Image (cartoon, rainbow, N blue to C red; front, side):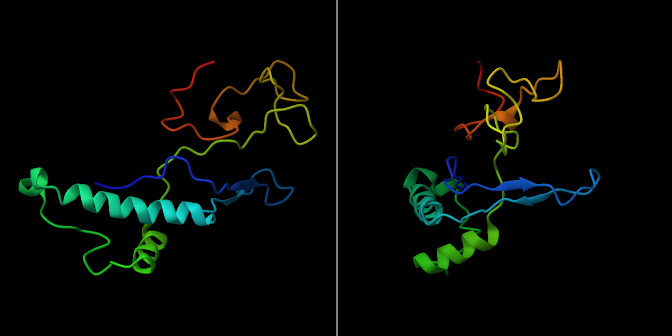
Length: 138
């Protein structure tokens, strides 16, 4: 079992590195930048441990792999989470939708300044759904 945080509060960013269109963008995921995200993951590790300790799962439980029995305090669990956390999500929101100068697409998904082009994927979602990003429909 592995806990997953479906609704993180911290948000990241994607920015241009400079004027070269072929330069890699600067991507800042900002994992665990919000304290509530950290607390949610600490609670999730404890919850998974509780579920794994149930007698019905005893025949299938070969022991905890990580963070391991030595990580007991919140600080120890937090250290593990910060060291081991990975993205298990589908980033969204890199193409802001709206009418302002910073928006990439309008509310009808038309790209500002480019005729006959629309963006209709997760990049225009303002927030992450609690599930796979291919599930939402209009």
